[in-house]
Structures are given as structure tokens and as C-alpha cells.
Amino acid sequence: MSLYRIQIDRSLCSGFGACAEVAPRLIQLDRSGNAELRVGETDDQAAIEAAFSCPMGAITVFEAATGRQAA
Amino acid sequence: MTHDPTFWLLARSSGFTAYVLLTLSVLAGLLLKSRPFGTAIKAAWLTGLHRTLALAGIGALAGHAAALVLDTTVKVSPLGLLIPGIVGYRPLATSLGVLAAELMVIVYASFSLRKRIGARNWRRLHWATYGIFAAATAHGLAAGTDTSRPWALALYLGAVGAVAAATAWRVLVPPLPARPPRTPRLTGEPA
Image (cartoon, rainbow over all chains, first blue to last red; front, side, top):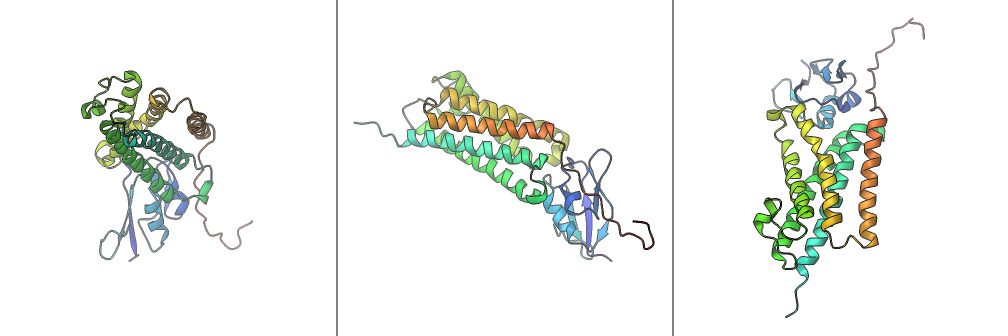
């Protein structure tokens, strides 16, 4: 099991693109410019950075083992 | 008895403070979307700055409103702070100030309600910021008693110029493309 589970609230995403910049391995922009996950779970700390970078607060990161919100 | 100028000085200085903070918040918001400095400025930091400046601007607005009610130079009632057109002094200019202040509070509060109203509506509402900035500028120029002073004119000119330049950048320069993910090159693959 990986450390983190990432969740994107796509209804909130406004296509700022900051998440795909800080975590290109985890998140990409789709054709309409909105964020979509490349992986659901990861050990990469960039997941936390991506959550912090989102101006809309659309990205939430949970600890996969406990389900506790990490960012 | 001489007139105590304390609240009049506070009213004017807090008005300018609110205007400068609003301008800086608008600039931070514009930079957040157009990212002219690339990744040199972190989006999370810029987002925090954008929201903090807006909140500080609303705080300065509250000070501006309170000082105007407490001062006797211009007669402003508490109701006049909420309903445009009630203040007798330069009614059009003061009404613009009231509307700009109310819209600023609504736009700020909308961030907390973005889940309920949806990102699209939140973004539409954010367009009102251009109107808020224009109304605040007109309010300051037309209602402010310091407008004829060179430093005040320079401040308004600088603010409008900076927001116009940042808006032009946003419209004309395409936003920073997100870096494609680096995939490891397979051995033997031609370079």
C-alpha cells in the first residue's frame, strides 16, 4: 500500500495548472485543461505540494493506511 | 472648540490603505492565473497572499467606514454605509464606494462557498473584481478630498497602470503550460 491517496474535486478545478506543474507524475491536465489523476495512490511527497498549490483547494490528500487527511 | 481631525485623518488614510490592498490583491490574483514569473513564485504562496491582501483590504474598509461615521466633517450614518445613495456628500461617488465595498465582501466570502455555488459560478463572480476595482478607483478620485494632490494622482495612476498591464499580460500571453511528465527512457531506444 502506498502512503497517500489523492482525490481531486473536479467540480472545483478551474484549470490553474499549478498541480500538474509541481506533481507532473501524479496529475495531468485533460483536454479541457482541468486536472485529472495519473495515479490514485503514491509515496511521492509531490502529492502534498500539489494539494497546497491548488488555488481552489480542489485537491485533497489522505494517508492511505489511516484515511486521515494529510493535506 | 476646534474640530478634532483624528477620525477625518483616519478616514482618508484607511481609504487609501484599502485601495492599495485591493490593488495588490487584484495584481496577485492576475499573476496567479497568468504566472509571468513561471515557477519562481509558488502558486500556493501567491494564493495565500491574494486572499490575505483581500482580507486586509476588507479590514481597512471597515476602518474607513467606522472613521467616516465617527467623524463630523462629512455626515455619514451607519445606514449610509450599507445603502447606496443615502450619503449627501457627492452621492454618486460615495454610492460607488458602498457598492464596491459590498461586492468585495461578497467576492471574498464566495471562496468559502465555492463547493456550494460551483467553480463556474465562483469564477463568474470573480469577474466582478474588475468592476470593484473600477468603482473603487472612481470613488477615490471623485469622493476623495486628496485627489488634487500629486501623490494621490500618482497612486491612482500607478494602480490603474499596474492592473491594466497585468490584465493585458493575462489576455495576450498564453498561460504557462504544465510540464509533461518525464517518462524514463527505455534502454536501447534511439535518442
